[in-house]
Length: 341
Image 1 (cartoon, rainbow, N blue to C red):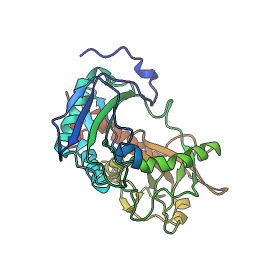
Image 2 (cartoon, helix red, strand yellow; image 1 turned 120 degrees about the vertical axis):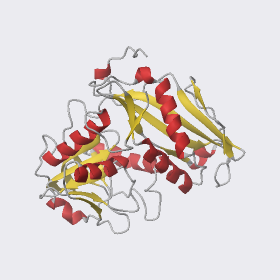
Image 3 (cartoon, helix red, strand yellow; image 1 turned 135 degrees about the horizontal axis):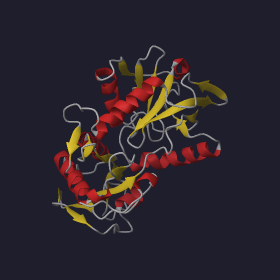
Image 4 (cartoon, rainbow, N blue to C red; image 1 turned 90 degrees about the horizontal axis):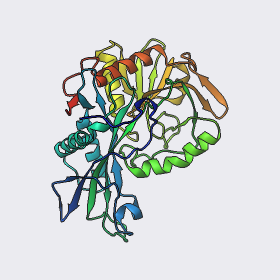
């Protein structure tokens, strides 16, 4: 299929309408067979459950063109499993994981003209999401839902390379113990908007949230997990029931152990320990790893030895290896790459 006439190298990280999106409706206790549509509008009742009580969950993954010209996506089964967990927590019907994977493949295949070519630095972002559609005025789950997938070509998250960012320790809490911090629900991101806008006004790129119960342990940012490297090159990520189980983080831990031969562990990280680390990064689908050069705790600066000019050496190896796996340059572990066409 001939590619769209797009300046792939100039793409930012934003929305561009593609030709097709996937839609499946849940009514009378079951999902319909689903279909592709060229209509990018969503029509719901003014009293829909999603509008009244924020009953919505979503996912994010990407499709890539490999060096040998294939179009692939990365670990979509884990996105399907996470969407299942999110739906169950908000009393929404589960969209089966096998159907989720099939819908991702079908949607990307229909929009393959929008998948950026290899070497462009761009990819096709895939956004599956689900929401309550029927009128709900009392506080209860909706009875009807839509599951949809939209796609949009996006450029690299960082133009001109990933320069280390500066973040602050936030006075706000991201998620309560036993709350919804471990699922990918729209409501979690809505509550983080004020904090991130305020951080930007104060000259910071992101927020570091500490655990809400004791405010002594590192959790995550508004949209990414933390990854630290010790001075003896051990990779460490925070463990908490209140943070999102990041697919990128899970993959980086595996890469650290199995590809780079490094020690890696997931454990509770006291904030007091942060100043002892050599490198810090934020990991997620959009950027893979965003290097952090400095953390500011109410005026007190923690500056990492890796500096403010580039990624630290271990973080760079992790980034290069995982993106190499995603693009087909490096052989992937079994089951990590789903070939689309």
